[in-house]
Length: 254
Image 1 (cartoon, one colour):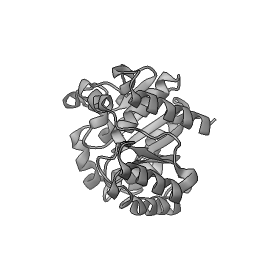
Image 2: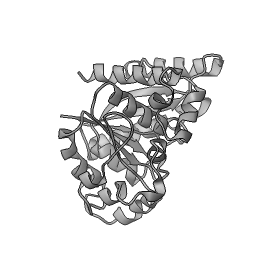
Image 3: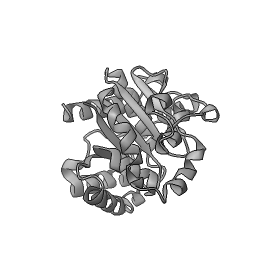
Image 4: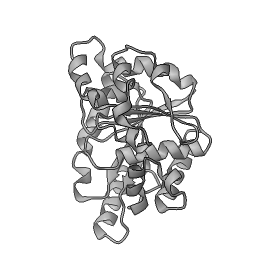
């Protein structure tokens, strides 16, 4: 039975998509069967895996409106053991369309829960908002990974996100767990980076992953080639960090 993990933070630019793509690829390399669901209208996870967003006909949008079975939306990627349900810019409209639906928060849950039989891990790349798309992802998930950038404002929106998670637990999904807080874009030369790490570890202690994702040029280059860091440069610091995170998650869930 697989595990569904959402990667969420309503703050943009904290490394959600980078984490989704590279964690999924790392788990795949470690011989886990992985499905990545792109639930962000920007569709960066889709293009980051080398798929042309313009050519997408079936994806998360059709899945949420229940017009197709999930199997029809699943695409294979060039990364080992990694499948993808892609996104398209049209996904922006789904929030408006779902507004008056009954059980609108559970639309994703209904369709992806059966897929747990087929995969070890299902990762959902969330949009940088706390709208209906993210709510659907959190309702469908077993746990959530929260990437936090090692910057001054990083902790600002965290309280809001944790409150949202609490209310999702209360109303929609009492099994939702926090998989962990992931520190990203860490630069050991900056005093600020080190202060943020200390602060987060002091406040959240057990909830923080031991693995810290360091700032890495190769990591930011990889998406422009439509590759995960594992395919692009397996010896880079970014690849090492994400493989270490994958090991940590497998160990935690075994």
